[in-house]
Image (tube, rainbow, N blue to C red; front, side, top):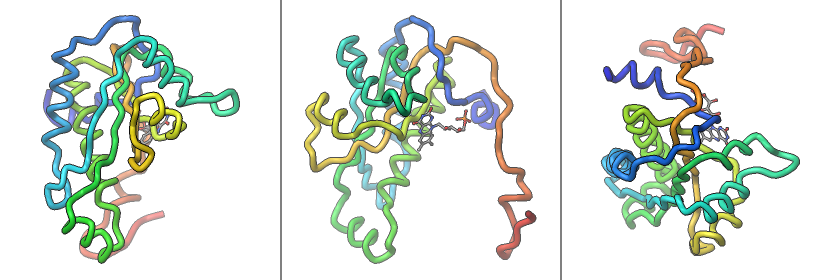
Length: 184
Ligand SMILES: Cc1cc2nc3c(=O)[nH]c(=O)nc-3n(C[C@H](O)[C@H](O)[C@H](O)COP(=O)(O)O)c2cc1C
């Protein structure tokens, strides 16, 4: 797919077929994530693939509650990818402190999108989840309390092949040339 077409085809998928995902496809998505750029090439990430049915269900149940149920769909997903931020190198931590910027979060966001774009290329659907019970996820997957689980990506074959129109700000609302000047 041409790159812009791929970007337009990727969308958050919240309905999945009861169909397993080929292991090689997941590995190619992880390869795309592995090749993502990161500040000082620190690669401050690791990934857990959760495809064991019982464990996956338990992790999915940590992404919603009775009160906040919008991630309920994760129960029908064949694979969950857990993105953990790993400690970045000393230089990077110094740079983060001087510049007051958390580069590792930016890095993980880029890696997540690399994963999702490759998944789209593979005919898979994904949804990035930022809302979940981090403590519960860590406990289920033996992740040390000192680490952070930043994101979860749901992966599977989409129930529908329809591509929704994107709801985005117009280009005039977000771009200006040479100085900060945006139209309302
Ligand atoms: C950091 C991040 C966290 C997100 N968390 C959730 C989530 O917890 N549940 C969910 O259904 N969608 C979540 N999304 C998906 C966004 O709602 C979605 O990307 C946005 O509405 C744009 O729609 P699109 O992905 O279909 O283009 C998240 C996306 C990002 C980038």
